[in-house]
Image (cartoon, rainbow, N blue to C red; front, top):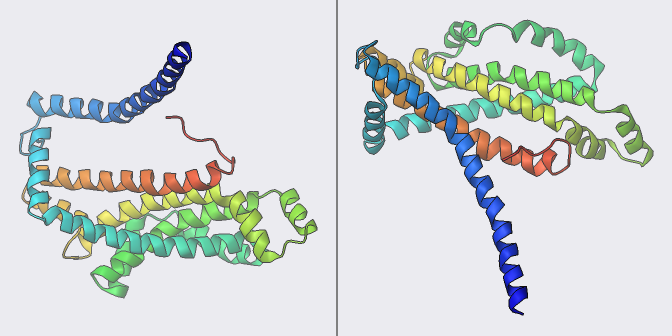
Length: 279
């Protein structure tokens, strides 16, 4: 009995050991880039190459971040930006998925939309800003619609590619088993195209971030991280500017880690269509 208990204890230790090591490895891999960038930043900040007002230390940035957070200013800006991002990107995702699926399933829809998308997509998002400000006026509506318009092209392209890449033998097999159009889409086309769709959503989100921060500087919105960064620039508050940049990075990291990666894990990874990311 004692030998058995000892063996069980060794087995438990062996089971928990690699798990703990894997967790530490994941933490190290995730924090290493930030440590390197922070070290380089500190070296440059203390080198005297730039005035401290223009290139603050990490301590100055952290102090500004804490002060703006405690005062409620930074959360207010972040919430307004996040709401605009979710509204614009949500609209882009819905429209982009509908158009992309239609292009992938219908030759007529492909002939209609593909030339338009091919012409409009390469134009930089900022080039549309004056038009949207003239059409919809400065403020929330123009910001949300511009974010939706610019970010939907990546969703359209990747959704279209994903639907077109679904193997013909899968479709014929489903038809042979009596699947109707609804079941064909939900059980064959959507799962087959989902890796491409998730890639398109990721790329669209990146586009949405870039155009949103820029348009908040120009669209006369009362609050927002872009407005905060642009306003801090006028008063040379570089530490406040960097605090806004840090919040943008944290929101983007959170959306990737707790939204897209979770969706991916519960769908295409579980289905075995792509491998799980190594810890």
